[in-house]
Image (cartoon, rainbow, N blue to C red; front, side):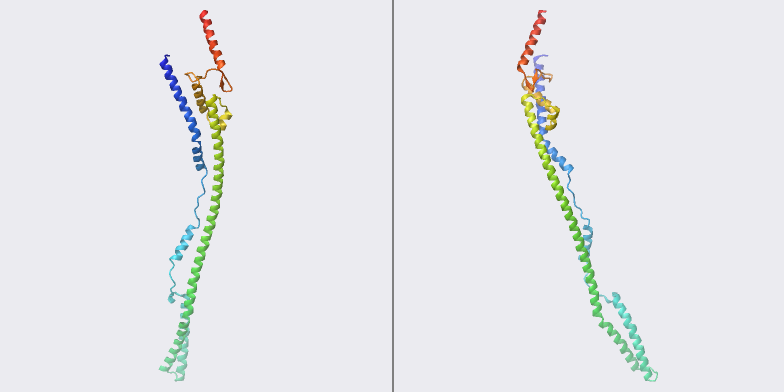
Length: 277
């Protein structure tokens, strides 16, 4: 392999290593936004839909659109009862009075008997007129009672609706408290993991430390990310060949320069022996 191909391969390897390191750093940075999205998807606040809203609306419309009081005696059952009663009694009184008057005149009808009979009938119709104020008052009382009952139903429905809404507010408050607590715990967990992520990344990038499974779990770093950071360290320190594998002996994450020199000397010595042979 000529020198230009070697340089080109090394540059490509360096670029891949830088890209992997940047992706590792971005993963740690984007963790918070990812957790926020998950929180919104997992914890939805309760919504409110009043089960009394329709009833309240209907009762309100009935109260607002209710006609004003108007007394119609011909549609009043109580008036009709009084009218029939007094008309019947009036006709009976008129008949009796005319009979008595005819007896006094020898059994013949006369203008006198008709006059006194009509007078008795009129007296009963006058009684019907006298009872009209009472009938009007009774009709108004019924109208007012119906309105009061409608208002009471409306007030009761509103009260039930308010009670239902207050219960919803309590649930909403509890849900928000739980959400805030969950967010706080997640934020603390994120901060701990982010700190561990940065610490591990710093350790690998400065020493070439090889992260174990527990390190990766605590920091949220993937094996590929850890390898990318470590390879970048090896590349910068000339310990990564063009094939992407490390060279030299390692102890505790540090390169042993003395061991590297020994390996080189041993290689030269071996080459010399082969030539003499």
